[in-house]
Image (cartoon, rainbow, N blue to C red; front, side):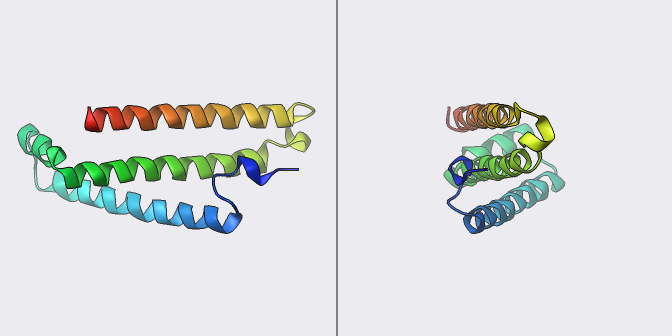
Length: 119
């Protein structure tokens, strides 16, 4: 049986809500970046836009949203497809190892993104 301890949120409803809100934040961020790129941008204006606090906060929000979105998605995939029935006796071990690996990769990417953004 899958326990909700490994889930990002407290319930399926909160996971659903985090997934949707993070998706909307990512959509807004990529539309903002897309509109900036469509106008033609050189290095100096790109650098200047990311030196503003508003853009840094928006980018940090997008990084955190991407991490939450990815974790919930990977958790759903692992709990749906990495079961004892599908993976054999070691199904639980494989699922937990996969979830730990995903969480470590997501954590490293968040720290790396924050370091690039604010470093």
